[in-house]
Length: 286
Length: 201
Image (cartoon, rainbow over all chains, first blue to last red; front, side):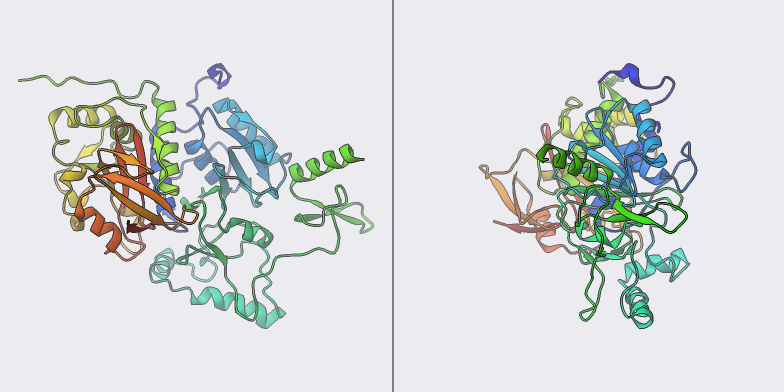
């Protein structure tokens, strides 16, 4: 690694060492208590809240010279948020970056888990807007802390039941609550529920950072992560009748894209790396 | 008045602290995995792994309690100089407790945090003679299960005191309360956080 590539006047990975230590201590407690939200002294980052300041602080505390970083926004490597954060860390750490899921040792993500299964040794850092799954039911932090302490999660099931009563099925499609290691109800960040099963017993380490709310939480590798459901309404992921208009995949998570002002639309893979690799393989076999 | 020799801490403070942390994150999230930790040297009776861990985690916002023989002037002064950590004489208010396996404090006096804030419990750093994934002479072989462990993992620790074995197998604190234990020997580290279920072979 060439230290000259780091922008002058900044510490490695932007944050000062004291802040990194504080975040690191919070991360160690977070992995020791899977799904529990550890408060931390969130810092101002050179971008507004809502753009991934929590994820960036976790990444800055974790990243080292030997890492290879991938950043995705809604699955895509080439959108504003992903490009900016990737450039930020390339500037301030000099680490290698990649768009290939299997090459990355560290992946910062906004609202998706890559389609390609993660491997042991990889670290996935989620950007989290609202870390508290009970917040929309109970606005008081004192109360939600107590509810977590007492495992008082009945209201969460009531919220899901209200969906069934109103729509006939659980209509929650993203930020679908999960139970981690049989103990803490956790917000998986606004990933589509399509991605929830990938969290269960993943060989990769999953870290979550919420910058505005100043919370860090984690799921160690090989940890039970169960999406909440009912015996007669078991958890189900989204399915599409369409397949990807570019690569033809019928297994990936699809984004609907409006093509013109006549209402024409197409569905394409949200994971750009997955889609591109499938296209490359199709060209080889063609 | 004897002057205390200050030792070099990390050669590369930023890089070394990050690497030590990544090893600690690895062992805390995958209990029983053994990682090497030799970014710092030996500090008097403190092994390289223990000194490295202290340098990476301690600062002026953390309180540490040192057991015999670590509560010497040399260790205390060096830790204070390099990290600015606060030394405490009251084991119950320490964020980190550093001890040798044969000099454990009363475990029930260590800070546990509360049901609302279980993260405020103490991290127990225990220096032992040897850590291995296969049985050693005079060692206790532990079978670990829980988060971070696919199936089960075996860990052998030499001369693990009865008190600590009782704590690990009995788990007197109801989850989410509990001690997160980092085991350090020479230049290797492993950890047994509060979620790990421990059986003795």
